[in-house]
Image (cartoon, rainbow, N blue to C red):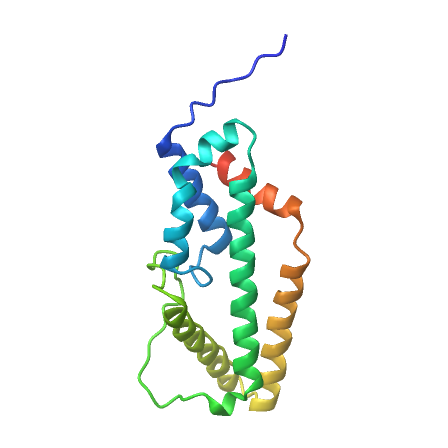
Length: 172
């Protein structure tokens, strides 16, 4: 006889899995917006029961949305760099939180755009401080974002499954 352990999956555990999964996929909170989180929260309480019955689709749906948002952000960054780093305005007094793991989600796409402009400016400034000229900076950053984009396009369903199961297993 085969015996299965009752996982005792509660709504609270479902919420914890949801939070852990989002933390795994976007721990720095630079790809998803609060609007995305609100939309995804519809499945938050059902993740546990879906897992218990072998339904993995909610996990794949979340993973696919994050992948889509990563692609959007990387394309946005490439467009900004391709327009030329000399087009960026460094005359304003701005701050950027480097560790965003505890930061609130940006409210919407426009707010996320502003965050990414700051991230790009920060990367440009760091390279300028290291003595790189704008042409070299653009080349380096475009190569970086292109490499990240290539890795996103290489993601497989096994990657989504592993991320989902890791979030779930981390609860025990």
